[in-house]
Length: 243
Image 1 (spheres, rainbow, N blue to C red):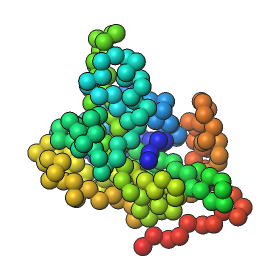
Image 2 (cartoon, one colour):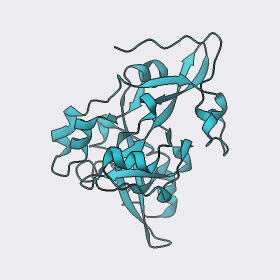
Image 3 (tube, helix red, strand yellow):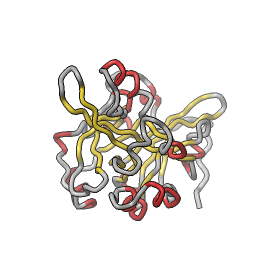
């Protein structure tokens, strides 16, 4: 599962790293902590178009949704897409070959259960380097305004490494793309069947630290720099090193 994410790196760093245009003014950044259920405007890189990051709302609305009410009821259920079933679920199966995407983040938050209590952890790469999550996107036409709305879902897989220790109830993690898997995922000439077995999540280099429980409080006010600061919880065991 991946319901919360961060992206605070500068456009200069992102454009240098990915060689793609990053129009920051189109996205809800900087995002120190944003919930997918707020449906933020997030940068995605579409399959077959690695030259630019495009804005899309988190929470996929299938193109076949007939009304705004239907769209609203679906989008909170499509925050994530389970990798194991994306080629069979109605909302996703038509997208796996032609509308894959990379979702740009530099961190995400999951909760660890210990001794009957849950503790939030910020998970990132060293130096909070940006990275991509596998995603699917779609375009839906709002019948009320006749405007196209682009939305996306984050693909999830079985948790590994630190994420398995942290998200120890659901045991899921976002499918973090490495360079090779990312190239395949975003290649329009590669079918889902051709790349599926090669979609192994990057996880060994992840870092994680507990953060304040303010991230669990619904509503505004969580998107601020100090929300990512480490928090000490007496009695909470350290995570085990990942080999």
